[in-house]
Image (cartoon, rainbow, N blue to C red):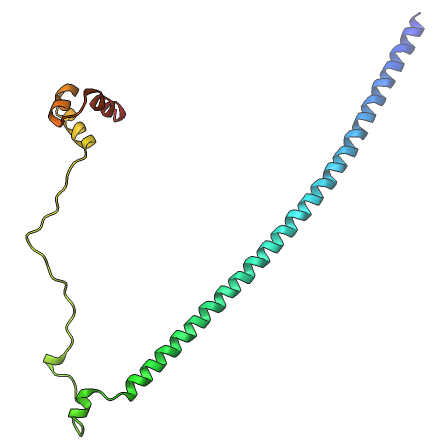
Length: 166
């Protein structure tokens, strides 16, 4: 009888060992499938990122080209306006043609810096909000009912404001 019991325990151990091996193989196959799916997902994400960065690069190049072209047109307009200004005779030059046409500016003709006018007699008015008034009166030691009477507010509103700021 002990012999049959030992054989039974041995067979049970072998069966458990086989079950564990099969379970590990099954997990290995499913993890390989998951790894394959994960690799596939990684490749898709990488491809999306590459296309997105390429699109961003193209948009950046277009933006740089627009900025450069606008700078060039601005420079051309500036040079054209300078040329037209240089070609256009000034009215003073017509009156003072001759040796003194390019004289330096006199003190009265110098350009003064712009100074904005100062408006006197106005002062900024600062008003406290209801909440600030309630808090300052509460700090002075007034009760919520007294504060409500002074500010013509409801008792509940004053109490609520005081509770929020505690």
